[in-house]
Each structure stands twice: as structure tokens, then as C-alpha cells.
Length: 180
Image (cartoon, rainbow, N blue to C red; front, side, top):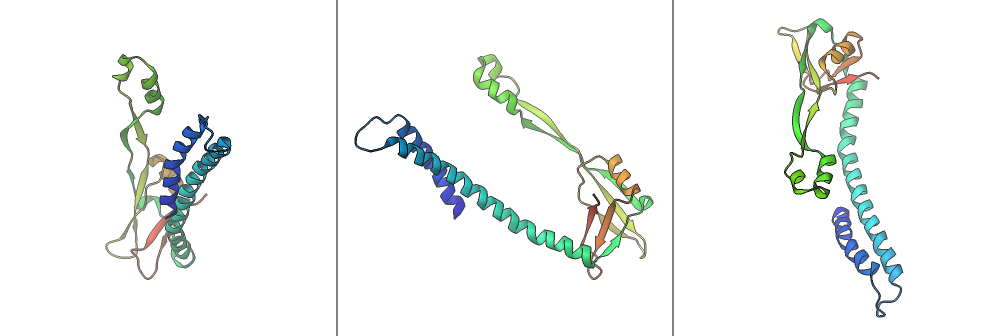
């Protein structure tokens, strides 16, 4: 509900700001105060949207963080062995609009407007597959993506900075953690 009210404030406030910025009439008293009020309404709208989104993100993240802390406290702690790991590259590239060039498009001649305004963005990430001994066939644990290339991930595994936490009662519930 706060998001809807915030969006309404954000949409209405510029109309009042524009109207009272150039208002020279005598019917509405104190146009400067009205202008300032609409500026404050715009700020209030953005704050309402920001706080609502922030509180929703917190509601989503809290159970996940609590679950991770619970696994850290009660789960089986496993340091993956380098020889039992497969390192996979999950990097990819995609095209996005270049914000630096798109602003030039508005200012430049028509020949600039026909230019390609996209850039290729490279996302570097890697993950590991760990085969834990103890059963036949060995248990397979697949990590989430780490925001660096496979050589860096190998380095962290060799330094024993990657830890696997597994729920002892439900082996399908696990997560990989990187020590800081």
C-alpha cells in the first residue's frame, strides 16, 4: 500500500511543482509555499517507495539468513577436498544499453542517433561440484555461483576457505560458504 501511495505522490508532485514554479495569479495565496510543499511531496513519495522495497527485501532475506545460520550451527561442516571437486565456468556475456552513449544520442546530430547504443557486458562467475565420499556412489553437492573465475575458486578451495554445511537429517539441504 505504501508503494502505491508513494507512486501516486511521485506522479502528482511534478505537476504541482511545474504549476507553482511559474504561477503569478492572485487566487491561490503563497505559491512559493505550495511549490515547496510539492517538492517535499515528491521526496516523500520516493522515500515511501524506498522504505517499502527495503522492508520487503529484508522480509525475504531474513528467513534465508536464519536458515544459513541454523545450518552453520547444527549442520555438518565439510571442507571440500580439491581432488574431489570439479570446477565449472558459469560466465556469460549479454548486451545492454550504454548509458554514456544514449545521452549523446539526444544531443548529437541524426547520424549519431543511428549508431549502435549497446555494449557487451561480461559476467564472470564459476561454481564447483563436490563429490563427498562415504557412500556409494559419492554424494554430489553443487555450489551456487561465485563472482570470480575458476582459477580464483580453485585457489580458495586449496586454501580451505570454502566450507560446505550440510543438514545431517536432510542431506539435500546444504550451502557453500566462503570464509572471509
